[in-house]
Image (cartoon, rainbow, N blue to C red; front, side):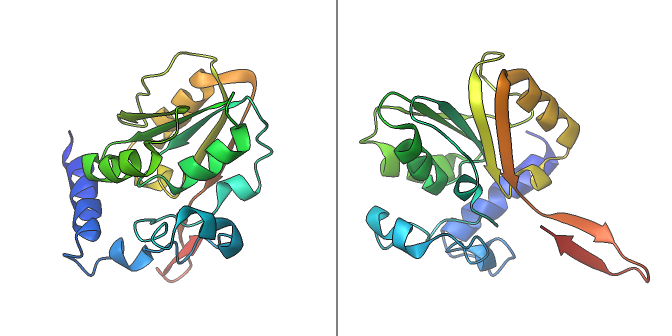
Length: 184
């Protein structure tokens, strides 16, 4: 792993263990994601405890029964559970994350679902066949990549010709006077 990847993995692992007051920890419980709380209740009271996303990509995605969805940076699995409900028992949901601690939580949360597969991998080099995916979603993860072009190249490679992607993320822009702002 690169120093960049090591730092990201370490920060997220610390946030899971309440060992830091970092920006990662301060985004826990999906504070910025605006999920429909009525939809989340069915997954248990702690479902957002380890959710560090900035949006709810599946609320806008027209995912259909039987489709295959990949969640880049699946974390602890909240969007995996929502995606599984959308694709039904004939669909497939794939989660990819580099952090083994996040994947352990996701595995525990999704163990009862036969149609969820998890990979520990970099989103810049996906362990998936070309032209095999209907939807790619990502929730505040692509901004963490040191090679965003590689991420988008991989998305283009794995999507079917009529495949789609929906990403919730942040971009920092330099403003006049040197200030930064996050744009969603």
